[in-house]
Amino acid sequence: MTSLYTHAGGEEALRKVEEAFYAKVLADPVLKSLFPQRRPHHVDHLSWFTAESFGGPDRFTRELGFDHLIQVHRHLAITDEQRERFAELYLEAFEEAGLLDDEAFREAVRSHVEFGTRVAQQNSLAKTDAELHPLREVPRWTWERDSEPEKG
Image 1 (cartoon, one colour):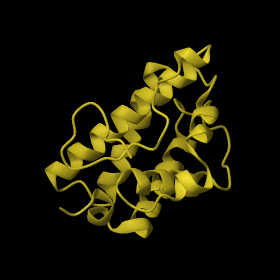
Image 2 (cartoon, rainbow, N blue to C red):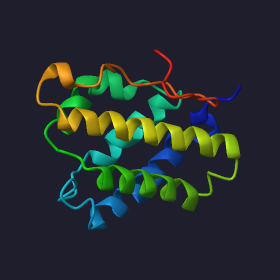
Image 3 (cartoon, rainbow, N blue to C red):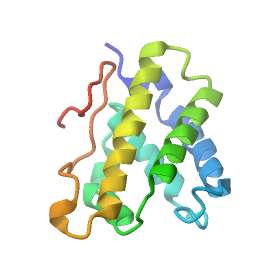
């Protein structure tokens, strides 16, 4: 079966979605405290993570490593409202790109962002390493999802 990465149109298509998404979060009053200013490499990092998670190249792992993701979320204290808004804007960016017409793909993207925002929120609230989510690698998303990603 075609990977989610290929179905989405590859790196270029995902980068366009992430650019649109990032513009949304930077302008959003609920997310302003989490995204106070544009960071030059944020779209690249988001694109690499999504591409790898959807079955594309492992550039995020090779160039940044999963610990980078844990560290950028530590101590952000992401609220439920912020987590839900992030997920809403993420899906909106995919919708606006015309990528959510396929119901199975829509469900995969939805479950991907729901899982990811829950991991980020847990890590953002962790006071100790033991309270961090146990995930230590980029999750691999497929067409049929349940609550947990595949390993490597």
